[in-house]
Length: 192
Image (cartoon, rainbow, N blue to C red; front, side, top):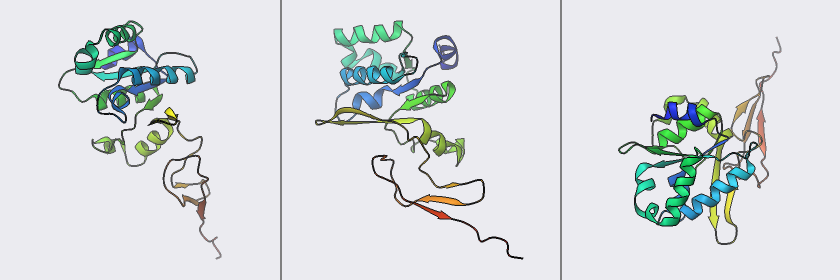
């Protein structure tokens, strides 16, 4: 089934998860346990408490760790509740999770920087702004376990206000824990 039809039948979603990115996060082998934990966390923060959409390549749904009986059961549960879309063989799953997130106007959980494809086709100003407002990132550490980093409550990119002033953050990065300092550049008033 093509993704547009599938989304019409099963959507909308509050969040889409790049399953491969999450399942491989900070490890060499794909982990359904890690993916399951993140799915649970995303469901907890969902306004509707609905399952997020998990996008996985078909090979991850049928081969390797997917053959483990516990993982098979988990995959079947996700399929039955309309929360798993397996991308066709030979296709790039990145296009599917990006399309699903834009289509559902929802959060997207991935650490993928989305630089290696032609995402710039979406426009030089639109895509970075969309990404900033919708991308949830994941960190994995022995101290904190799995930690979700939500999009900032305000924009942290260079921006122009309605009166023509430019607001420029003096530090880069999306760490909201670090206070930001801004440089505000205004044009001199018309003195004629």
